[in-house]
Amino acid sequence: MPLSEFQKYVLKLLAAQRSQESYIAGGAPIAASTSRYSGDFDIFHDREDFVSKAAAADAELLSKHGLSIRWIRKGTGIWSGEVEGGPQPLKLEWAHDAGFRFFPSQADDEFGFVLHPADLITNKALTIADRQEARDVYDIVSLSSIVPIAAAIIAAPAKDPGYTPESLIAAMKRNIAHPQVAFDRLRSDAPIDGGGLLRTLRQSLAVAADLAMALPDEAIGKLYFEDGEIVVPDPARLGSYETREAQYQAVLAQPEDLPFDTLAQKYGKNQ
Image 1 (cartoon, rainbow, N blue to C red):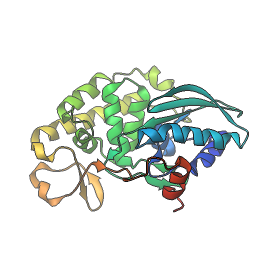
Image 2: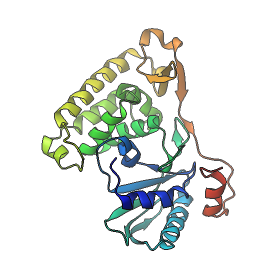
Image 3: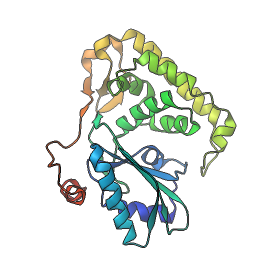
Image 4: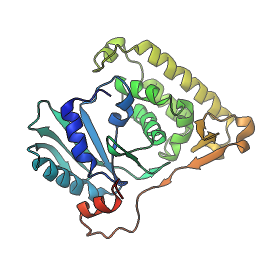
């Protein structure tokens, strides 16, 4: 992701405050190695009470460096605001995440802590099922170089049992009919071939649909590994793969009154 000098500066400041329970998610980590720009950063937290504490701590840190936050929303489980004092607008959003995922958040030199690509792509599949945004198509196809889309669709119902792979695929199909102009509106350093992205995604959805029909129910909701890589499993040899299931990844048994900055120090990236 092409980051402006101001975005890099803010990210560097905020990275020191991130931890395994306060991490960058959403589109920014996905776009980190692509040509698409992102104008906002989503900071997720495994505990709802961390959201307001993290937002306040980040705002205090930014204020020490001559920046302020114009608050847009302060609610239960979600705060958002725009950083002021820099050369360009930058939106920050702090939100609650369930903490139920396939991997713990991982340390990152640029962002502090981020979601694992397997969790980013399964979240993105669920997001596409819920909204119609061209950037989501771009993001999920970009991530497919690391985690196959069909593998993500088979695994995603572990995070939202309201979906089967079949119903997830159907919902995604309804939300990916974007004209080229929708991709042209995305901020990018290079032209975006919307038709190519959609063909890739639809081919992956077809693979996932065939796979879902062939897999037994107990095989759904898992990631499959071969030689250390996440793969689309062959239903005829399920027993030959290593598997991973989603679980609650948050740090447990936290004292309720422990200040957020103390938690960030205890579980931060430098520990």
